[in-house]
Length: 402
Ligand code: RFL
Image (cartoon, rainbow, N blue to C red; front, side, top):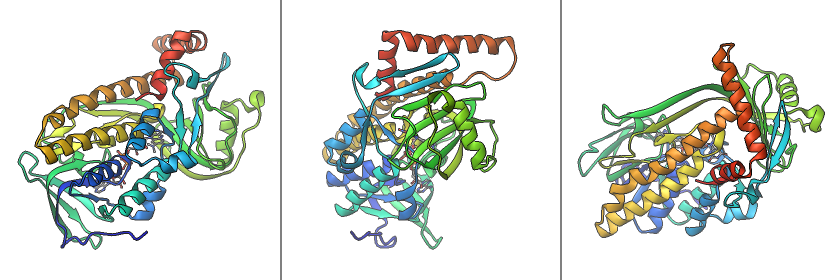
């Protein structure tokens, strides 16, 4: 496959300019290109970085359906693994939920986000889609009129400009689309006061379930990725630098919090990647600002406690593609007018569930009387999840659902 990078000077306009080559931007690009819409993706990173950036891994059943509908799911069917069990290890004992047999009886597909992004990119390029790598969008202007522009820096650092009829901001929470929103844009934000050391270990999974450990030292999580790589999370003090913990300290904390002495040893290995994720939620009031439309993390950031971000990104990209195709092919703008409202229903459902998960997994900090009250409520919530079939069905529906 040859990567066809666009020549900036030769191609400086497109009906839809898409910012960002993540799950949102590349799903959108594939769908628009397949429908014959003139579009281009502008991505600040180089192709290697795009193909190897490890983040999500748990794809919801709906995400697989969307990708299937558009012929984009070959890789995940070939290499992804169905997953339907999680295990809670708590101070009051442990229990497993086979969530794939509860609620709507849906399973996750475990498939690393970087592999999904690589598949989407390969498909887009093979179909002749246009993409400009190492092209950073700086500002989007003129979005209240019919011909918005995007000012970019090309790979040599020179300024250039793209004209469009619509700009799709799929460039994440700190991208140019967010920076270009009109003054007075309303955001709903929450700082959950919790940080995780997010780790990728060169080690096979240590259990056949997603592991959630609640421990007096803090939360620890285990998530399978591939046969040789496992994602772990360790709650850490907010502000902790990513390199503050040695590998020995990391494995000792994981062993202790996941209660390896009771449940069997964890498979240790080299830490391949680490970052600190502060758990925050951030939702915009609307996803449409004239001719600028947002999708994925640019539109809403769900804290990663419920594995919703990449799934929302794919869902929103499909809704946005349908709306843009209606408008650009048939002159029917009704779906575009409904785009914000349709997405926000899913976004708030995901936010509420992520918030619930955060409260389930973390003990409140501090010695105030209210902390003890919240801690007692948290334990009662865990007990209800352990014993109530109705609660388990609700959990399963929200955990896999989007
Ligand atoms: P992305 O993936 O961040 O892609 C945005 C792209 O835009 C580019 N970009 C720009 N390009 C041009 N000009 C600019 N000015 C630009 N600024 C940025 C970037 O280089 C990048 O290529 O956003 P998108 O497409 O909205 O996708 C969102 C998901 O990546 C994110 O929500 C998930 O990774 C969240 N998430 C998870 N989601 C799930 O659904 N399931 C999971 O299991 C899951 N696990 C996770 C996660 C996020 C994590 N971290 C690191 C926060 C686990 C972790 C640790």
